[in-house]
Length: 344
Image 1 (cartoon, rainbow, N blue to C red):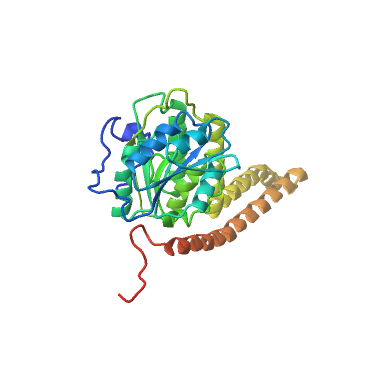
Image 2: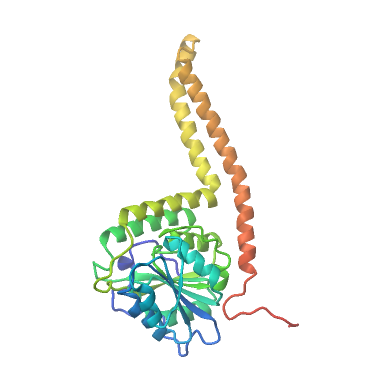
């Protein structure tokens, strides 16, 4: 698999209008497999009719599920008219909707896509074919567009920055971490805890794949502007900070030794800076004139030691959790590879 550094998709991928680097499958890739398209929605009556219809046309054998997240417009009626199976999730937030989808729906291949009709439904068969033929667990559709309004500079910059932060800690295998269009295997879904509540769900999906070292791929896919009258639910700064917070939480939970070692280092460095003048004075005069500073430096060094010990203990716990997730992952067969029921 070719790895790609986390750069802006338009800088590293073919320009809009070019064909994805996948040959169209010669037969429906969903034949013989249970394929579902999962579309989380909020106030999307303008876009969902076309979006669901495009995916129904691209994947005629798949079931299209639309999960509404307390929309006050005609989203439910329009989605049902487009032929989708419509369900609802009361807990607000995209992460909550995705968690409900993964819990409710059992399939072999999952097409997870935003319902704003900006992602290319025609690419879905080739993406599924790549997942199944290469025995992958995730195919990420990297966005390719020359339309500035479709992929705003603020979103583009935030995506690059956050993707690089994740790459530095968990591995450099995804170039468009915040893409809302992914093809996922059943064993990915059934080993994924889905703890995020909002737009940070894409970060959690990416880190899950990287942490378990799953076989994954990223394919450039056309990305277009929203339909007239449709608006993005993503708020650049608010949701950007939520995603950044999720990255910090994931580092703490998945890399506790690194996280608490950094905290210990900060405490220890501060303690040394405070204690150094006291040591010079003590060596020169034999006196310690500033007891409050000495006590503070001693306390900070104790905290540094405790943080380091916490990191060591939690690293062992995290390894056990990772092994459990790995065993759950291995208990589920890959798409098209059902377990044997008789002798070889």
